[in-house]
Image (cartoon, rainbow, N blue to C red; front, side):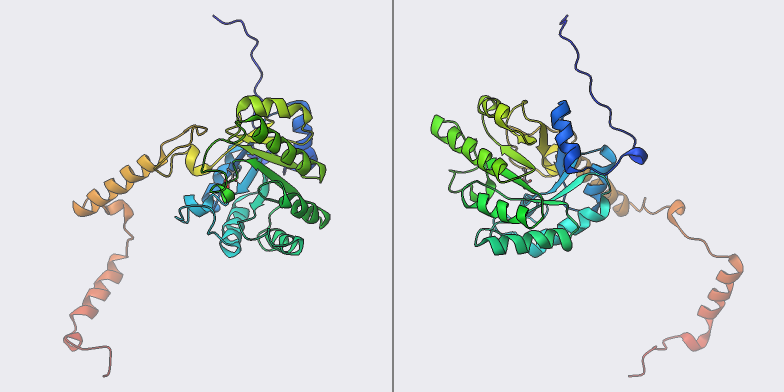
Length: 309
Ligand code: KIV
């Protein structure tokens, strides 16, 4: 038997005593080494699940383009669609920090465009912060949005909005040069004031080497266990969708299977007239029913159309 010391797992406080997540609270979690749990959500029920489960940060990810809107990448999703998803999530959340993911094409053109669209996430959808992808010009955009008073989360490593340029949906930073580029991007985003940063699909050892220089909370997805927190896509972790599963995904439920089984059972019940039964019916006072039946039996009703053609 192993004699390794057990790390105490902080309990999720009951819902009624939970207080809204703030940026200082996230900093404190990093300082205390308390892991940060982040998940994506795209609608009211998934937000309610995140709330009840005690998640710290909810991201309305542009992954919603694929998970709930059926696009084959994150590239086509637009601001109006993202705002609609984010506003629905807002209505289902009380305590987690809500981050809106700026879609491809909503921030690249200029700092003015980036600030205007970031403001829409805050004002129209009720988000607390926004996220954008990549280093390079995105560092300027992040700086401009932060100067406009909106907290920004960065995102480096595999950045799906530019997956084609990165050679597809695959791990990044697997050469010394590419790892250095990821580190440089992360440091630049940290320097302009991002409150947190996502590292996606980066070798665990590369992430571990960068971590001592990161002063802001780093949230990993496929970046190993040394980050300050983890994020998974809601539909991946619950297996709501079928198809390819990235190496970094762990399934915590099999919801697609359960949903198909449930709907299949309903279809079978309808076909066999097992549903509905009397427990699903509304009643009527027998005297009222008799009066109604008398009305139906009037000769004057026979064949009479309600319409005067
Ligand atoms: O869009 C998304 O879901 C994301 C997470 C994977 C971080 O960007």
